[in-house]
Amino acid sequence: MLLAGFFIGGPVKVFAVRVLYGSVFFRVRFRVRLRVRHLVMKILGIETSCDETAAAVVEDGSRILSSVVASQVAVHHPYGGVVPELASRKHIEAIVAVVEEALEKAGLRTDQVDAVAATRGPGLVGALLVGFNFAKAFAYARAIPWTGVDHLEAHIYSVFFGDEVPGLPYAALLVSGGHTSIYHVKNHCEMTRLGETLDDAAGEAFDKVAKMLGLGYPGGNVISELAERGRPGKIQFPRAYMDKAAFAFSFSGLKTAVNRFIQTHPENYHELIPDIAAEFQAAVIEVLVYKLMRAAEKTGCRDIALVGGVAANRKLREELAKAAKDAGLTLFTPSIDLCGDNAAMIAGLGYHLLKDGDKAPEDLSADVYSRAARG
Ligand code: KG4
Ligand code: ZN
Image (cartoon, rainbow, N blue to C red; front, side, top):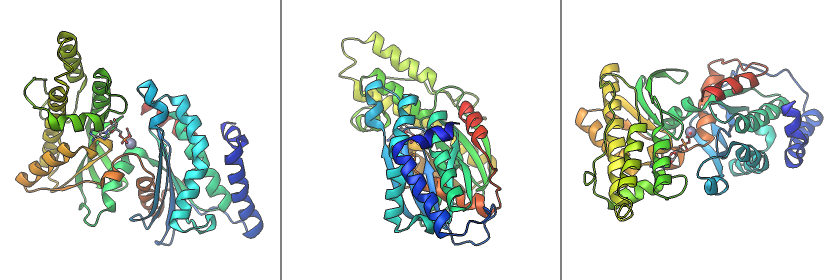
């Protein structure tokens, strides 16, 4: 019913009809192949798990032919966070134009796409369903394979677009607005989560602290820029290591400490904002670096990766690179444009899932719901 609801909308309907028209009238319809046999593939990736509508075309899981991201930041900015219902509506409005732009930039017609991959979760239910059902309809209409991709595993895959890529297995730190976890990555389709945050995600803590300081949403970038001018250690905030031998994180105590400082220094906290930002950032980074280095030690991995929106943080990249060098490890990070949400990582990992015979079920919608609920 939801799918039918989506396609009653104007632009999506026109696009769907065009894709169907091409399929029904110009091609002999054949049974959807669920297993991809040839290796050279151009995959259309679609990502709508939160507040970015993204589409990309990736060849062979590694060559990005196009990557388009339409951000909704301006829509959610006045509310200080993502409003789920607004996010879904904006995805519906943007999805056709974003996919068309991705195809155009890649120089492809719809009938030159070999397969489709879309984020299946975790994320906002309504937001996920827009991209997921669009991808499914596209694939059915063109009778090409399709699959659903885990958003977090796709972030982890984002280090595979560089000239140098990690050797398997490797240890990965995923730091985003919704998640902070450490993984032991055995291969693209097999990852073990060693630990995760017990409360806030690192990016969420950046965003909440920025909100407390009246710096707007999202706050990661603003905090990191202000921190460049601040003096870490001038004010002191706690580091939550939890069990030092384990891989759990906690950032809510740190967030409370910042809040308490603001409450107890109403007259002068404004002048100290760069120092607050610098010490808050230092407290987050210290724990993140420590835990990833511990994970490498425990798993015996020589290669490590830093991924997710917070991986764009310059200081975090710098501190982790230093620690890796001292320990004789090699650090891999995505380019800045691939740290945040994008569809290239979805298409890239989708290629491996399809190639390895991941059979896309007829209907993954229920999975979207359950994963979103957990995410
Ligand atoms: O991966 P992402 O784009 O979306 C999720 O899947 O959550 O991550 C977004 C998060 C936001 O919380 C944002 O504030 C944070 O990444 N972020 C940063 C920086 N750039 C983005 N955090 C710290 N420093 C940055 N430079
Ligand atoms: Zn993400």
